[in-house]
Length: 365
Figure 1: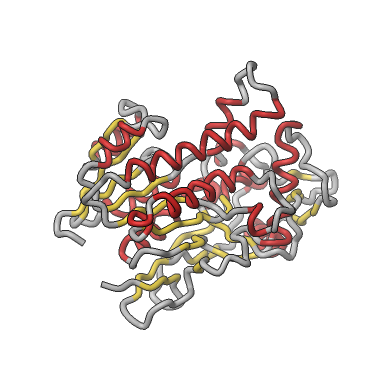
Figure 2: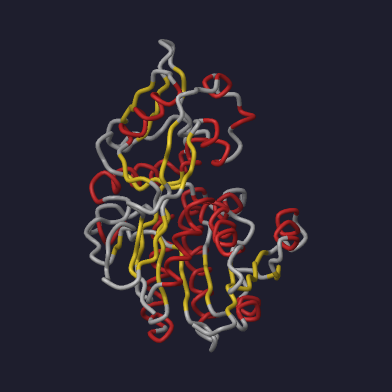
């Protein structure tokens, strides 16, 4: 890459974008430009104080993206299906049964806008696009309503087919299942009358799942991809484990009884709005049968795989456990559950780095 390097980060104040920025802040060889719609927000101001160039850009506006991308050596792109859905769901002029599909179309267009704008940047050497697997494709048409996956996957298809030269500079990162989902209203463990905490969901207890804390794990993955040759499709996670393994660990760390409860096929989680039930049911079914990452996709690279005998970029997150449970977490006091970071802290899990057994993907000069 060139000696003067500029990293442009979309979603700078969000989980994934923020993680990418934090991973590069200590690297003096990179200048960082963070993109956000609201440059006066508290988070934007905090980034500015840390030396990040904050620039206004909107995923709905190609011209603003092209302007913000000028001079970029590398771009990290992320779109947010659920944030868009939250807005569209409030629009009374759109029929409920159409809102998920409308959100899919909206996010897909945002992804296309990124490729359209990035293709015009002559200085660009690497685009890392945050995506997810194509559920319809890898399930051979069985699961067609995992639209929060497909919007991203179909944007990748658009980039590959429309801009072959840009595609030669592109890698994809699929961030694993967010641990912060356990803090939401649907998946938060609930204490049964017998005192056992129940983790209720549609995923079978023995199915392996890539687990990630997006606000901590995205950055190291993206930094490795930028240092690597392009063409990678990386599934990024801190642990590859089953729900049963996770619940057993959770129970052991906190010293409280817990169990994994799998819903019957076709049944949705209690409290999920009707508008989302099909999305959730297809989501669980797809993961159960075909994997979060689309396990038949031959392009997917896991962090521990070695694709080259040359220089390797290493990144890892190892979970170390302490035995001291926190009573306020056992009681599920909401105060300590406002972010994935506090979630990990409350569970007494510590993030450490080590040289042996690290996650790694190939990197070549």
